[in-house]
Length: 390
Ligand code: FEO
Image 1 (cartoon, rainbow, N blue to C red):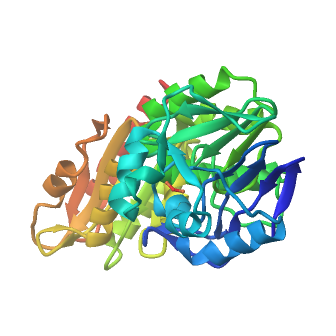
Image 2: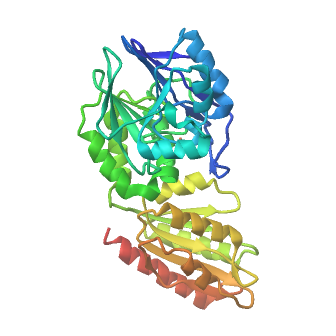
Image 3: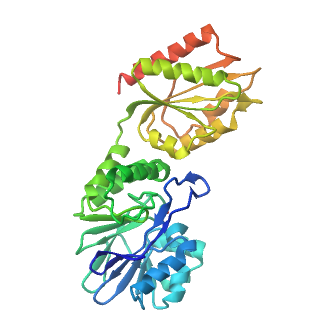
């Protein structure tokens, strides 16, 4: 159902309460929303983004409820399907509508959605588009999280329509981010999974949009921020170079040897007053792990050897770690093998993106023995020394 944000500014998107997986990869414990916005100016009407294709009927029902008979401009901030997928249906329903976007996004939309070239108006960074009594200004924000991503600034109302930037996978009946504690968690999860690999670009784009007077941030996922400083401050916290006194231990254990080592390291780190979070990879929500990676100083991967290499669950976790490029500073591996293998070499070969210092692994044969525990003590001592420098 549509909702009024301000006079003649409407929410017309869709909530996806039951969706539990995005990109067939990312868990969505709280569903998500595909936010689309309608701005009725005194002379022209603009639709900002669309919805994921299965929700197109909801978008159209919202537009019908508002009596929208003509759309002049369809602003496309981003070519990914969850916002752009319904553009062809919108263009078919509103034949006068033009897609307003940047050149990179136009190219992607043509590739992905086969939209005819004559339906586009291409704009530059900073360009303005008048709707009569209201003015849209386009703000390019590349790499949050695709190369073509941009925002729209509604000049008179000082509202930033930020697309994925500042978003949260959170389906809630609340239009606005009133429950900041809940939204913080969803937005942090979203940042960790989507934005963290592009942290340097995110920092640049935070600076760019923060220079504008903003009364409201309206993203494409999750609730609208009436206190924009809440989400901007959170982003500044997540993207800064500081790490926390936190060790993450993603692990998998087949017969208990690696798990025993993990338990020992957890106990010893707690004794040293170092925060630690083990994640059993056979049951972990990888979104939880990603959120902790935003802050953690150290990762200790726990893996047994399967045939000649690391356990496939550990390989997946390491691959994701390398993709997400967290600001983690120290990395180590603990685990156990039966008769041989090259687990450590494989793990080391998977982390080329990370700017980490490798702490000497503890990789043992069979169940841990007295000498192995002393090696784990050595690793814990090394971590404590490193964390003292944070
Ligand atoms: Fe919500 Fe990058 O799409």
